Length: 90
Image 1 (cartoon, helix red, strand yellow):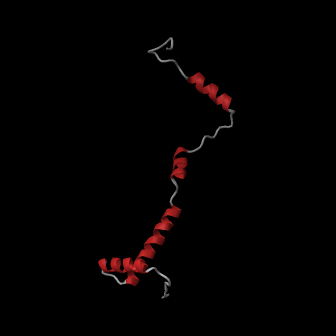
Image 2 (cartoon, rainbow, N blue to C red):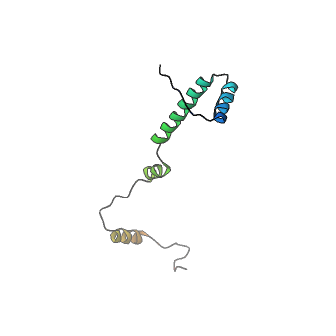
C-alpha cells in the first residue's frame, strides 16, 4: 500500500480535517482518504455525465432533410389551414 505525505498544509485546514475526522470517529488519515476518494469519484462522475446542452441535443435530435429551406417552408405553409372560428382571418 502506498504512503502519501502532504507538506505545507495550512494549520487551520489541518484543524478542520482533524475536527471532521473526530466527528466521524475516524483518524485524520482515514478521513483524508475518504475525502480524496469522494472528490475523485465525484469528479469522474461529472466528467462522464453529459452536459445539459448535450442532453438537450440528444433529446431533440437533429433535422435531416436534403431539400432546401424554401421548399420545406412552402410545404409547411401549404399544409396550414385557417381556423374555423375565423374563416376570414382577423
